[in-house]
Length: 316
Length: 316
Image 1: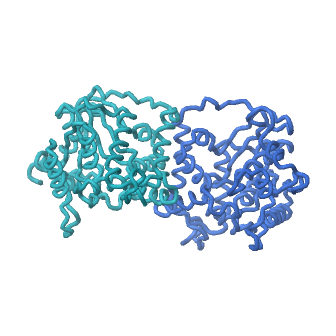
Image 2: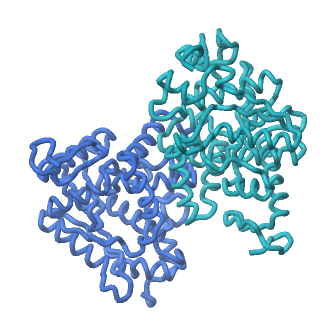
Image 3: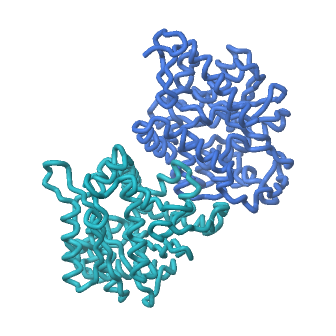
């Protein structure tokens, strides 16, 4: 297989685009594609103050790398969740992903905000989930809540105008399949490359690589020499999302381009008015009486309520 | 596994309903369920004149059997499509399915209309598809067109008020998956247990077993001693629909009830207003200048145009 641009040996063949590229041309092509999506969905301009949510994985580090290459000044935020691997596995998931993230930022002189959950609030995710008795099987819902809260808070307090996440096409297609299996109107209306800011304190959220295949993100990280954490979060193993990804991969195998067509077709059909506008679309948010951050219901936000159920002092 | 009703050995365990039943209770239960759906979706009442589209397969024959048991007077229509198996296979698909359908009707003294495509119009489906050069690979789209036309015509000319088809849950879930992978607004709006009659000559179409698993339909046919054609139509082998069915079966295996939840959730979300009403919803139909049957575009209907492209005389 030869690079379409220069005829040198290709490092990747993207069947869905009928396109094979060598290392150098792939490392040009993917950021250029990303730039196209940033403009197409009006995600941000170089005048924006951009914060990238980084986990130490291939997607978020590659995204941060591409934004920098494209001339978008972007800082990072890493949330240390206090997650290890299975006992005896020797995996220190959070420690290792933090080390890789800090190493990435340092090597490129990029600014990185780190929030250490246990140090700042008194408990990491597994402990917090157990103490609040949320997530009997898995702490994933607690983790999602905590990350959404902290990412928005760091973005807001740092004066950032936009928060970018590394969700790739495989992530989005899997979530879409999940949303069509449950037919959740709310989720179908909100699954978007851009969620606008709200006056009540939610920073604009964007997904610049939502049209990039996971395998292309991994190829980009490898080809750029980015060291990232290979392991999935130990709690993600056996998760719904991974299961949907496997099913979609199986479908993609038979029909190259299916995942992209599925996700893009959805965005286009919604844009063309397939769905009825939700009545609650412009629901006003409230301000949490404890922390001052935005919250759906009046009173205390769900993040503060979570910590009230798990007093940070002695049990940690 | 014991029957929940009587404690005798069960012949079927329906994990999605957490229900195991013996032969006698299953043969009561499935028609009762079907009756529930007929009422719930207001498909028809005993005052209606019902025509069942029968193919000789398990779904349509079991449906006809159940309607009779439930006290709905229903006649049948069988369309002989002139389809054999692969050369040398010894399968005479249409002949065999016609024989089984006629035997079924005769044994129960039910009235059956038979349309023999080759005898009445000059060619069976494979020949027609070839001569009109529609469907290079497969004649399935020609076949669909011909069946929809003839079923409606027989229903209309016989004064039937409703046309019932044997589409089961697996059929509907597979079509739904296909419709969400292409995000066809038209198809998503029209996929329904009931399509109302139009003033311009389309008879009401209903799917009384759209919430019954394929495996339950097969169990019903076996338990009632209905002889049906086991083979799929030879052209269906390798089709998209069968592929989607396999994927959904794999998902159902892991999550019993997934197919039902998927299809029902869709119907409920649409009922609750998830989709925007289509502008073209009430488009007026026209009357075909050749045959007088309803047609979307003015002039000749697509059935008549098909036969004009394939003169019935000498080539047959």
